[in-house]
Image (cartoon, rainbow, N blue to C red; front, side, top):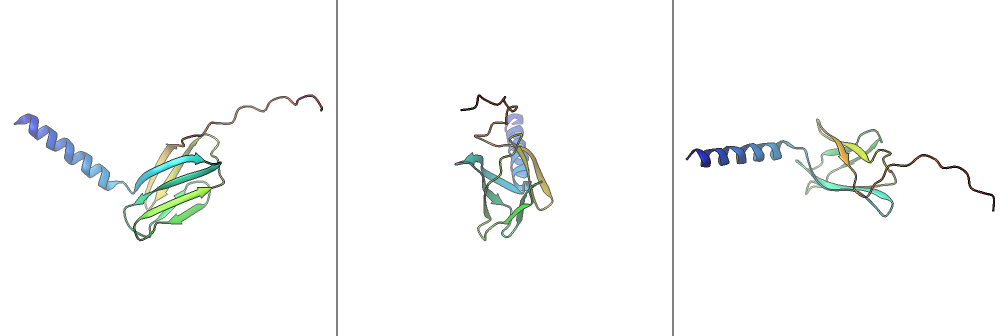
Length: 108
């Protein structure tokens, strides 16, 4: 009986945490040279912002949103804001930080 109670308690915590999140992200990746972010918000018409870039979009009536930006984050991390919630340090897939500048090659 105790075992069943623990399982139910854990399930309630997971469901509560998931319902409290303002964003359900599907994609955060570099695709064909662009930063692509797709997902769903908790309510339709909710503004989603890529923090620090000024890029904002409103979710559709089905709560979906999509960014396709000519922006490559230097650290391959970014923050997204929806409503009062900010999701920090999202890792961007297919991204690599820039290395140091190399020396100039021989004149051709």
